[in-house]
Image (cartoon, rainbow, N blue to C red; front, side, top):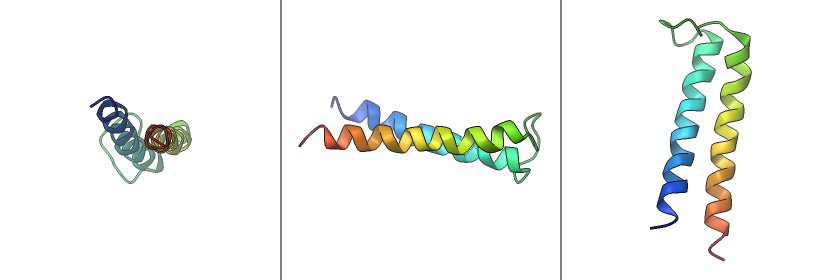
Amino acid sequence: MKRGVPIALGVVMIIAGFVLWGQGLGAIEGSPMTGSKFWAYAGPLIAGFGVALIMVTLQRRR
C-alpha cells in the first residue's frame, strides 16, 4: 500500500506533463498556456519527474 501513492502520483505527473506539453505546443487549445514555450519545456520535465518517481518507487522494493 505504501508504494501505491507514489506510483499514482507519478502517473498523474506523467499525464499532466503531456497535457501541459500539448498546450505549450498548441496542440491542445482553450487555455492561456496554449502556444507558450515555457509549458512546451516544463511539460516533458514534469513527465520525466513522474517517470523517475515511479522508477525509484519500484526499485526500492529490491
